[in-house]
Amino acid sequence: MAQVTVTIAGKIFRMACGDGEEAHLEGLAKKVDDKVSELRQAFGEIGDQRLTMMASIAIADEANDAQQKIAELTAELANLKQERQLLANTGDIAMTTAADAIDNAAARIEHLAQEMRNSSKA
Image (cartoon, rainbow, N blue to C red):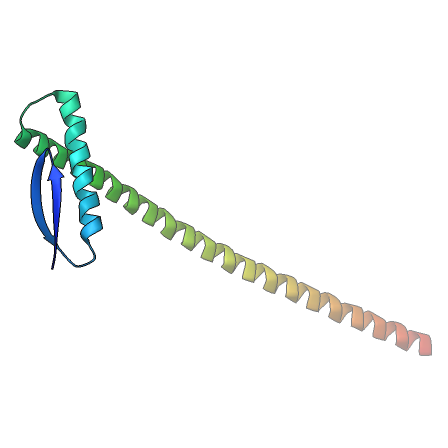
């Protein structure tokens, strides 16, 4: 298991993570540290614990918004797939109807041609 050292709110933390996940963990820690810094600038020195808690809630809120957006987009994608399938089915029906009409027209033309041949022989 890999070990990573990160800094959040000016404090150094040594953390374990899966092998190969070091850069990902460092990136997440940087996002938390950036959020703490952002809140520190907005609210001043209100205590590391409070800033860390506020940062955690803000990040959780962003994650919640992202999950809701993913759910909405997933539902929209499902609807679009369903509509695409309905359109494909409608297209298949239209092609079948058109093919039937062409077949009927061809049969009538053949019938008329046969009648014309028969009448020209008589």
